[in-house]
Image 1 (cartoon, rainbow over the protein chains, first blue to last red):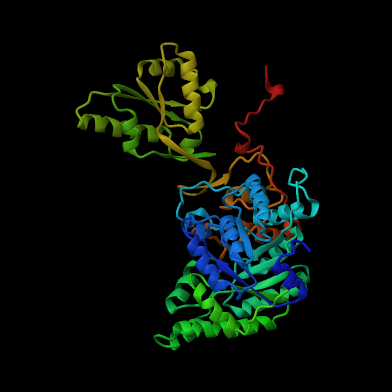
Image 2: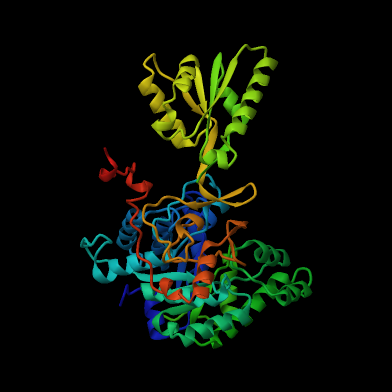
Length: 307
Length: 230
């Protein structure tokens, strides 16, 4: 076992996993984390805790992860390359391991120009692929980058993101292959709406045997409204929403759009389950955590497997 | 070349407040070519200052002078220039940040009648190339360890907003960077060019952590060429 986390063990067993996502509050309000955690508990196998997503200052991922553990959930600590150099990263990883955090996700991070402090200086000492390599070296060789031995046990299940919808499209699978080469254990993809492009991407990944070297979780986000769909398609990096999906939402009529969005999502989850190489779902219900129990139930993913 | 942009006039004016004799010193190298601190720009700033002082009823003398390179003693050691500096209360340098500092050090070293004040009229923006009429774009951050042989002659440290060595990130769309539709994704350019050259293997493996010591992260950098010393 690489970390012995719930997520790792379920994936090793061949269970179809589901991970959730929780954005920490813009302050030290523990109750916000606890409330969101309560909605996710029992409905997902692990929960990603974002690291100042979209470069907006929030409670640190490591602290919110600790609260989640106390609440009886398993966190996946996200870590971005934007705000920390290698010294701070390795230090935080020791701290995370000391707190009992067993999963982490290596990310480049949204550029600070999108966030609340565009005046900030970024770091980008190492990139997300080098971060994967760094964590793997720490875990498997028991050494920090400079070669010094680590005191104590360091275990971590290493994740990373993949965006099949960015450009150049033909290169995306090669970037995934680089993450595999660096030593990633699991991948969570960007939100998928364009299933055709995703199938093409997965076919390439399977042809290269990447699904056998890491577990690939398909990223999904329910569409709450036509406005949200239009906004995401226009403004969020890596999101392509087919016009027919937007038309279907609109066709549902006033008061029924959100329910239709969940229905579309559940159908999509069934489709994703059938795609070769997909080991689970990463459900990003952004500020819609209270809908997660309903979505997971409707998608036929309850009860969650126990180990 | 080093590219600069002139500071707003109000900012320059506030620097020379309470001075009665001002010397505007242009630079004949990089900032002349990028039209920020050459002879023409010296004349324009001089006229603007004179006009502003006249309007405010102030009797201020504004002198203008050009040095070929403010970053080199050889071009600064001019008796006419030194005389003008001695007479002035303040020197408004229209060179890049290198020139401003060098001019300050040089004048303070050779003029022993007290401290010479040298202030900047430009913001030094980047090391870049002329990419079109009146357009310059950053090309090098001087990281001290060039990787251009691996990246088809396109610098990811400079041109990628995240300085990724294993790009492109998930924010690359239609060849553009996530930070702006006006910015090309450096890694898109790199990948497409390497593909066209049949050299994709150069970026197939994980590029290791960069050693940032030769960059500014390692502190002040200095080059000594013993063979060039007399």
